[in-house]
Length: 518
Image (tube, rainbow, N blue to C red):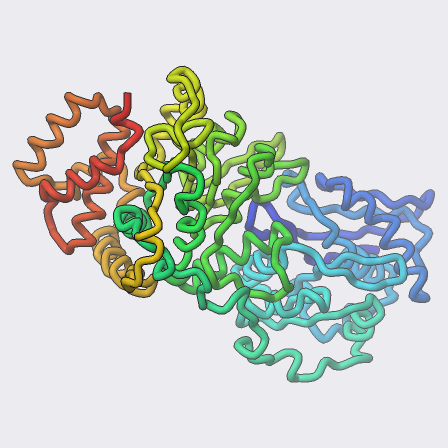
C-alpha cells in the first residue's frame, strides 16, 4: 500500500517542495524515515503515531517506510508531521483518495502535530507559500495560526486548521470550509509591523550639520558609516534617527524582509508584514553565529535580519575581533554563505552598516569637552583604534567626527531640518541611481565594481588633480580610492550634477577621517 503527499522545507530563506512517499508493507512493525531527515523529523515518528491513535484512528501495525525526496537535500523542521500523518492514513485506506476535494499532487501540507492531534504553527510559512505558488501548486493546508502569513501569497487556495481531525474531515468531504475562508481579502488581514510614523526625527537634533550631511550622503548611496566622538556627543541618538530618512520598502522588498523574519521566527505576530526598514542593534557580547547566522540548523543572523535596513554597532571597538572580521565578506558580497556537508545556506545581507565609537578608551582624545582631558597614552590610543582592522575600515565608506555640542547650540530655538526634508532629497538622488543602473544588477553607488566606477565616476580636471595629490599624501589603498570616488558620485547625485566637481571630491575626502590620521 502506497501514498504520496507533498510537504515543504526551507534552505536558507527559500522554500522548496518535498515529496513524502509512504509505503506500508508486511513484516515486523517498524516506522522508518529516509531521505536525509534531521533529528526533529526523526522524532516525528512518535508524534505522528500518538496523534493518529489519540484521535481514534488506527495506526497500521506494518513495516512503514517514509521517503523524503529529493534524497540529496537535508530536510529540517517539524512541519512534516501533518503530511506524514495524512500519507499514512491514505496508504492505510482510512482516507479515500477518490473522494478528496482537492488534487493531491497539487496540494502542500505543512504543520507540526502534538500528541493529541493539535496542529502547531511552524516558522517559514511565507517562503514555503511563495515556493508553492512558483511551483504551480493550487492548494496550501497550514496550521490555523499561520493562516494570515500564508494569505500574503495570492492566487493559491489556503486552508488553516487547528486539529488533525479537522483536516481529515475536510479531506473526507465531511466538513466544508466557508467560502469567505478561501477568498479572503488580503488587505483586510495584513497588519503592519509598525505604522510608518517615526517618533525619532532629525528635527530634534541640534547642530551637527556636517554629521547630518554625511548621513544624507550615506543613505542616498547606501554607504557604510562610522561615527567617532566623545561620550554624550549624540552618536547613538543620531544613529536611531537614520531609519526616519530611509525611503520606504517596495513590495518585493517587503516580502523579502518578511521571509527572513519568518524563517528566523522573529515575526511579532504571525501574518505581520515587515513594512518598515529593519534597524538592528546587537550587543557586543553577541556570538559569530548570532551576528552572521549559523547553528546546527543555520538560521539568519543579525546582519541578515538587518537586510534592506540598518545594522547599528554601538561602541564598535568593544566587539570581539572575530565578530568584526566575520562581517567583512557579507558587507562586500551582500550575502552570507554558510557551508554544511550536505547544503550551502545563503542569507541576504544588503545592509547599511552604521558604527559608533569613542576616539580612545577614555573617550576624550582630541576633543574639547570641558573638564574632561584625555588620560590615555599614545600607545593606548593606538591600541584602542587597532581593534578595527584596515580591511574592515576599507569597507566603511564614510568616517565622520561627531563633536561635543555646547549649551548654546543645544538650547538654540532655530528650527532644524526635518527627516522628511532630508528623505525628499535622498529619494531624488536614489532616482538618479535607479536610472543609471536600470540595465545593471546593482541599485546604489556603493555597490559599483571597479569597472563601473571608471564608467560612472567622471572627474573634472581640477578634481582629478586634487585626487592625485591626496593619493600621494595619504597613501590610500585601491579599495579606499574606489570608496572615495563612489562617495563623490553620490554627493554629485545629491547636487544633481552629471560630473564630479572638485567640491564633491573635497567633501568625499573629508569623510575618510581615519585614513588621514597618523
